[in-house]
Length: 187
Length: 222
Image 1: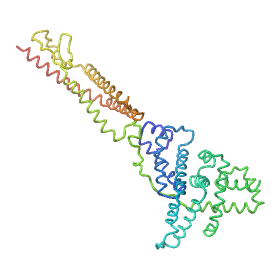
Image 2 (image 1 turned 60 degrees about the vertical axis):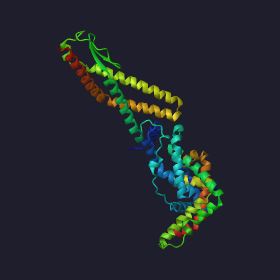
Image 3 (image 1 turned 180 degrees about the horizontal axis):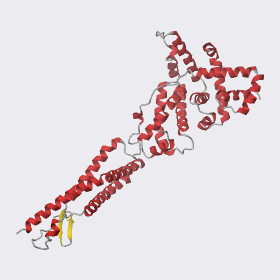
Image 4 (image 1 turned 60 degrees about the horizontal axis):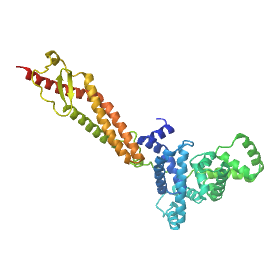
């Protein structure tokens, strides 16, 4: 059945739980992965997803349809992630724990060397993205992983598109410095 | 075009947002500027590196995200409501049937009359008897029965609406919507059951009517 966003929203407003479930299914993976990239923590991403969808229900009452529902959900997700990352960064102990639990800190568990290398490369990327300033990380994740255009990101974050591009450029410049060595190795 | 402008255009090119006119200027700058040429290549490498971080697959437990009764405004009743609705409909039907079966049919000069509540005073034999031709005919016209049933249902529905309306005075917005939806659903259910209900009620009324008439006939037989 084709996805008709406005029809589903109308049905949810009329109290149709099946329509609500359809909307959740439609955006589930994208919200989860957005949260995952912004928090760099799978467990936290699941919590964020849950919160986003729980906010979606009452939020649809006020949703005016000027933007797409997806954009609106992304905005909710970004705001929740911001709060979480902020409180996480305020807690040094938690941060240390995250770093300790990262794959690069694990003992040798017999994983083949090639897989280990790939995991390490992935972890370098993950760490590099996680260590970007929050505003740059948001733009990078929305553009690169969520595949939103700069203009849409500007609408979502309520920023001029020039600011969005500048942040993205700064993020890429940082990553370029950070990942340049490993990029050459892998290529 | 300076290097900063060129890098912004490199970024747009990397993500396929560069318009063709800007591309000409960018290519010209890149031909002349080794630093921006290298930056372009490295941006591409970074972009590939970023793609290493794959998505996580974790389908949500959609059932856990289903709105609860408190959250959902029930327009179409959720599964959990159906047994309650069926129960209410059954209670409504039972009430109507009790109402109808406790009714008494009297046959007088004015024709067949339905009396609700207390039994009418016993009619003396021979007083205003109805001719045998009338008695032997099917005494209950389908339209009459339907009108009776409709009226009873309307009374019952009005009574239910009144009680619901009282409850609504104390309910908040969500509760109000749920009550309204419930009444709507009840109405739908009632409409759907109407045909079967009417035929069942008619059969019962006919049975009652025949029994009364048979009793009367027995009384009239000398």
